[in-house]
Length: 131
Image (cartoon, rainbow, N blue to C red):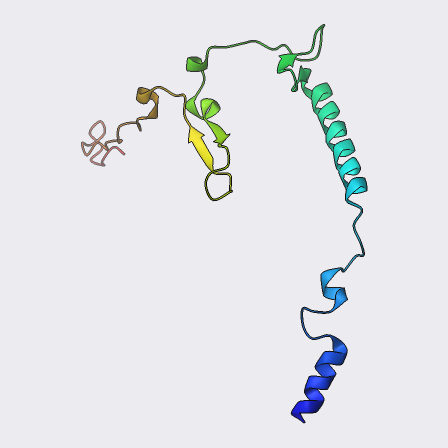
């Protein structure tokens, strides 16, 4: 009985070993897939450029009148979460890329706000605490 099961398993290709498991949708043409990907990314970039009146490749607003008006502002005038960036370092010793957070906010902007305190005094003589 065990020999029959082994023979049947070999005839069926065993789990994880059949060609169907390795190539469900047939061979992949990597060059064609790359062309399609680049084309789609280009289309998305053009759509974004029209939507935002901004050239993301040169990091400049588009010339001429547009729907949007871009103004440059100092980094210190915007909330800290707009200034935080994610920097990808070069490959380390293990061959993997490691993300590093870099903050450009001044130390004072990183401090949490002081805790709120609740008043236990009655509000204007009502006898109830003022929360």
